[in-house]
Image 1 (cartoon, helix red, strand yellow):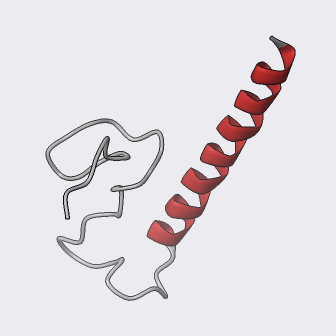
Image 2 (cartoon, rainbow, N blue to C red; image 1 turned 120 degrees about the vertical axis):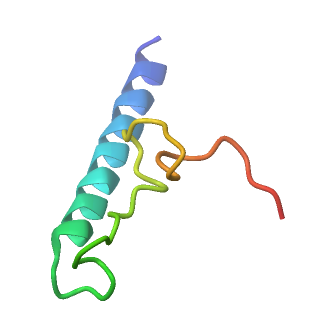
Length: 64
């Protein structure tokens, strides 16, 4: 369906834009707690990060 494909392309483009924002903030040395020895980059809500035990990617669910 062309409508669904177009909506998916828009959504996918926004996810890639968010990933660029997260990468830009991780590389910005002016932001607090984003640089220095032993500081892990923020990857919790990064859309296209690999899965892992360090909180990478978008979680499937949350618990409150």
